[in-house]
Image: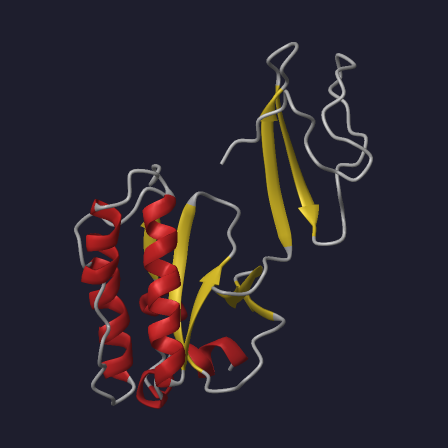
Length: 186
């Protein structure tokens, strides 16, 4: 049995051979299909471990979003995940995400307490605590000169210092920051 299964499945689920995928919630980068789905999933997983969750509610996030004129498409799911990550931490659980490299959040609830979550994998892909830094970062932009779309997948130690487009246009300075005319995709 893998370490991940021991964290995200109850002992009964492990004995019955339940697969990790059945304890995963998938949410598109734009958000839930219906308000409250993610909170219901999180509460259900906490209940599966035998506890009655308290404060697993996202109403406060919805109300704050309604009053925020700076909220952009794609920001709201991150706020939901941030909020629920904090709620779970207070209960001894960790919100974990499988880094599949897609625009879908693949979320699980792990019973962790103070347990370290480094090095976890599922189907060959890394699984990490939501509030931790990903091992790799995806950077994309359109060249301001030729409009070619450029994409890089960088490890935590890599930068795009002095990177140029194939057309020769400089994109990043010597420290890896985008030049003033370069806009990164969110």
